[in-house]
Amino acid sequence: MDMRKLVGWNVERLRRAQGMTQEQLAERSGFSQQYISGLENGRRNPTVVTLYEIADALGSTPVELLAAGAQ
Image (cartoon, rainbow, N blue to C red; front, side):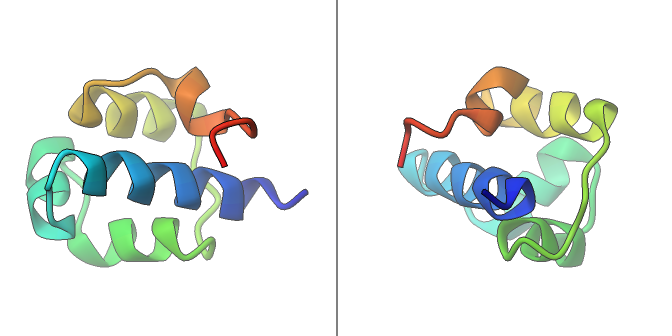
């Protein structure tokens, strides 16, 4: 299982469920829209701190970003 793709899929799923654009998530999280796009496409390898910041911006937890059962 490719963890980068799993995290990206979960970030995109949670973002879309809230009706949020990549730009809005970028603004809330402090990361660029390009970084969010790369993350959602499995091209980024986020750190634990990054997972925390993204999850916080989504009103979620880092564990939910790593959950395989959400697919």
